[in-house]
Image (tube, rainbow, N blue to C red; front, side, top):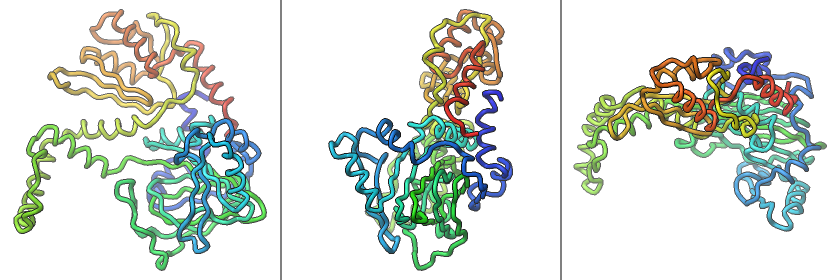
Length: 421
């Protein structure tokens, strides 16, 4: 298996037997997907017996949103949360006592602390072109729910790792909420269940944002599941960036709006003002620049996979050395005018961003479009020394890696870090 196919194969395995194409066409943002597998070792990622080490060696070192314990009220309309700080002397005692009294343990952003989970989150990120992160939930033996019936503003992939959990999914009361346009409070009197399932080890549940849901253990045994949340790029993101791009070009879009204090005048002026502003936005928004800004916002939140970077950046590039892009990166490049009016090229990728003069365009295009390349073969009018300097810079910044003797090593690193499939 090649490095290029590693993450696409991983995503296909996650969804099997549903294809990635069928998922995108029939389920993404549309409907829940429940896959029953009857294969307890399908994921082979993490078990409850490994949590002690993960919580001790990989736990956050400050009280924040990363590690908490929660317990829903008896009516499942609210919950009590406790944030935990591993620097406190009685941290472990608090953690085990909360769990013993029926609280669910929630470990956020666990993809940053477990290589196999990182790979799955990265596979989803690359397929959807979205910011993705993973949270781990351990339910107590009592089976009590940790959280009230609630709505998430992210699409969720739920992997049941150990034990069983009962999920009840309700029809959306507010379709496709976002972190900016959040759903209104749940109307508990109007909840209408559309899916009622018990997840067993190896099962998968995809839940589009906006579907209210409740989760509880089955009782008698603890239960562990992984939720991978993803924030896909939305039409709203394009519109917001279109306004910002237009406002950079047109000072009229940066003027004071009609004064709210003069209510009559304000009410009369706003409709005509909005029509004019919409026309100005359309006239001053460069679609390519808008798209690049949306991509850039997503890419800036992603990180490259751990692939031995520091061990592979020492050697200076040679004209005949074979190079390729690092696996697992979201990236894009664009050509634009800088403030001084000169054309420049900006390359954005997971973990970094770099800008080069426009005369490097042909060489940069070849680097981005080629599976592999040698510096001496790069097109363009820049000198060989400049080509070597460009390649060296992109290696140091984490976009490129040497392929000679590297492909096998990176693939081995990826496969050895997880037995996911």
